[in-house]
Length: 198
Image (cartoon, rainbow, N blue to C red; front, side, top):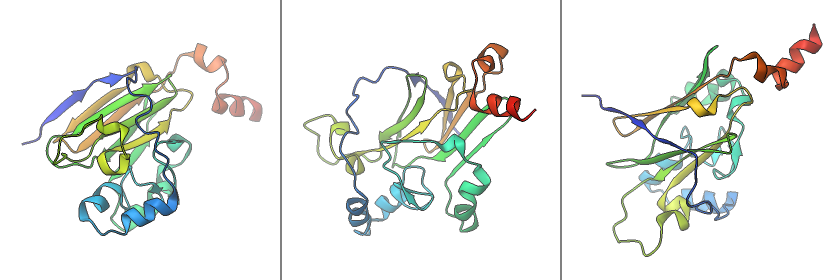
């Protein structure tokens, strides 16, 4: 039986420094080489939360311009190897991101829109065996949580963002496009290029 819930989209970050621990590529590679299956599930190839996203290293706490890429090009390698647990597309009306979330049991996912420019997906990826003395988000995120920050396109109507979680693992984010002429008259990149080519 499929369960689907609608998640609240937050606009205020009460713990702004939760992902401040810097992550170097070598540190991550050493961490991943430990061979823990759960670690590979969370941060391995095909996961939206892998620092080695699409074969290139990106610190998950940095904003990634996913929307600037064609999904067929971006995900073609992962799809051909059957590894992709993330997909994104756009229609005339909206941008749509679908991703499998890491975790065992109840998922503690949170979606935050920061200043109308960044979508942040974060959460605790496993239950801790021992009670934490401090906020789990203040520690090393790769031990206690996951995060991915994505830059929003200029025509995204972030105020109408909808987020759904199915069976505690499948996340879907729908961000409508702002189609009002007033927004495009302010000069989005695409609108400017189109007008110059005419």
